Length: 243
Image (tube, rainbow, N blue to C red; front, side, top):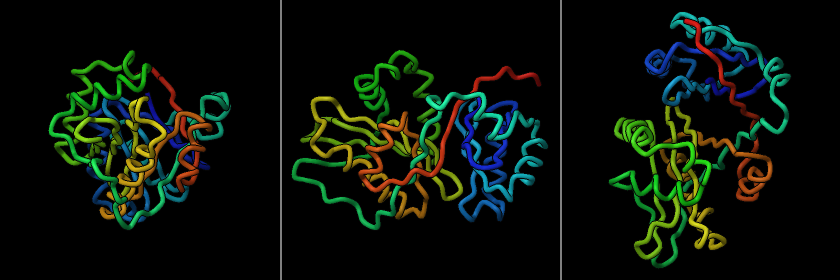
C-alpha cells in the first residue's frame, strides 16, 4: 500500500519495502531540500507517505527510483481512481507557543507502557479494534517511540486514563498526528481540545509542523473549529508489489 498526499503534480511512488523506505527517510533527513517544509514520512510495512513541493519532485523521483521504487501515477490519475468519499482532508495544526492550562485533577503524561494506549483505542474505535492486533501494533509503535519517531500523550482525569493523542511519525521538522481518542463517558468536557493543543504546543516547541489526516469532512470541521487549517487531501491505494 502507498499513502500519498494529493498535491498538484505529486507523483505516487511505490517503494520495495520498509527497509528501503527507512533508508530514504534517513538519507533525506540530511539533505538541504528537507530543511524547508519538505519531507518524506513512512509507516511500517509497505505503506509509504510521500509529501513534496512540485518543484522538487524530479529530485524526489530520482532518489526513490534509485532505491528501487517506481512511479505509479500522478495526482490527476489518482483522483480519477478514488471517489470523492475516499479522499480524506489533511489538516495542519496552528502554532501553539505555550502548553494549555490544565484543570485541577487533569494531567497529560507520556506513558511508560503502550498496552493501555492500545486498550483505550480499542474502546473508542471499533474499526481499530477489529483491524489491529496487539502484538504487531506494540512492536511497531514501541520501536518508533524508542527511536523518537513517535510520541504519545495520555490525558488522565484524577489518575484514570481518559484520552490519547499520538504523533505517529516525526521527521524533517514535520509530524503526523493520529491515534486521537477520548472515552465516550468523558467527551464534551473539552478533553479532546486539551490533547490537540498539548500536541500542537509540543510540536511548536520542537519546531515541528504538525499535520493530521481526518477520516472525513465532518471530522475535519471539528479540527477547523479548533484553529486547524485544511491543507490538502489524502487517499490510500493497495497495490501488488512486482519487484
